Image: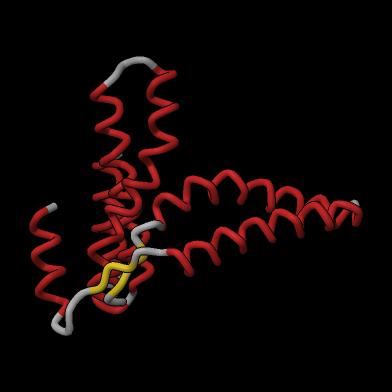
Length: 153
């Protein structure tokens, strides 16, 4: 998986080298996937039992994505909510339900109320994160701190 991620990274940069500098979405996508691949590899190497791998991966995969995007967000945006990885544990199971119920509500309009309730839960989690979040910010010359953070990982 790591090899395929590297091949995709190189292929896209050969196609358009500007992705590396001008496209934060490109960096965030590869950072998140890279973090997830790293964490999942660590989980598989720690235990061989499938049940334990599944249980632990549900908690650690959002952490892997968070670790992968942390230096990128600190460099480009200058701040990140430390609670975001924890809130993702609650958001990720809701998203497929919203997508399925939104599609089904096109066929059965009665389901729109259920879809709206799910969206309300999602918005409540988002508001909670904004109000009670722990924000990590880089100093005025944030690139120095981010560079040290990247080297420490």
